[in-house]
Image 1 (cartoon, rainbow, N blue to C red):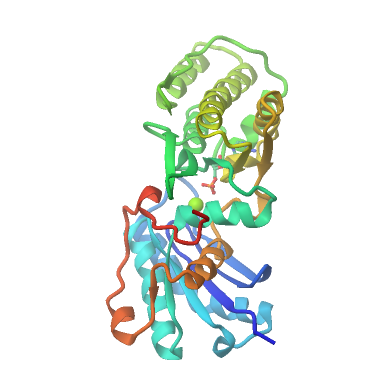
Image 2 (cartoon, rainbow, N blue to C red):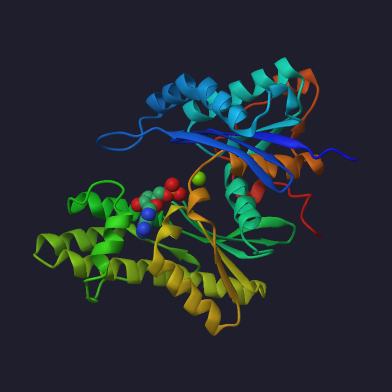
Length: 335
Ligand code: AMP
Ligand code: MG
């Protein structure tokens, strides 16, 4: 009998340090810890320190969860980029150290590719238009011409960050997305700007406009409702055009904002109207985690993509902080 390969993935691009272990189609472990702050955003250097402090503990917890020893692992993968330098460096050094010490092949994974492959792994979507909406990123992505390509994106802030920025402006605290969703249930529509430029979307002007309306006394429920309806509609318009252009029949929502039920409902309505199917990545895996790095780790290992095997190759591996998804080679996809 051929033994299934076991891959250990290390996520370390931003706030989260995670270790995931998978064996073929099964998740054996998922352990993660997120760097948080009381006030304000991420301080990159502190975030790196957080990861450094916890990396060994998280690795051990993941191995315990999987009931494995590090020697049982066949492949080690790590998030090579894009991300914050101090975070990326911790993951890269740790992965290299383990690969060299235990003589395992090392695979460099693109973090966004991790989100996309993980979305397919956990849903029935095969070849969707991806609606990737996290805090920092908002991109409409699809596989075309032998690459994952970005069809549209947010020009300044991503939608999650835009919602959080609005939340800060009106005193809702962080993260504001879930609170906005609740408040919106008692709101009604008021007119605010709708900004789609070609296939791209722009949220920062809308947020400023909404904060100004709040200061003039407009009800917060109405602002939350309108911000959601307009922000989601802008993305769904671009998604619909990407579906029409590519001829694809599936849309897959991934990223933290996918938690929003109104967003899922609007995507469903659009997809139904054009005979397509909507999917959403399970909430548990929508945030950054090690499983999302282990999944492409195994896929890439099997197609020899970004795989480092010799001691010399592994020693030379470095981070890729600005690695775009359209620069990822995808030999594992069907031609
Ligand atoms: P991520 O960067 O993928 O971890 O996602 C985090 C972002 O998702 C933050 O900006 C949150 O405000 C946002 N978010 C989380 N839950 C919701 C929700 N229910 N509705 C809208 N946004 C949300
Ligand atoms: Mg992410």
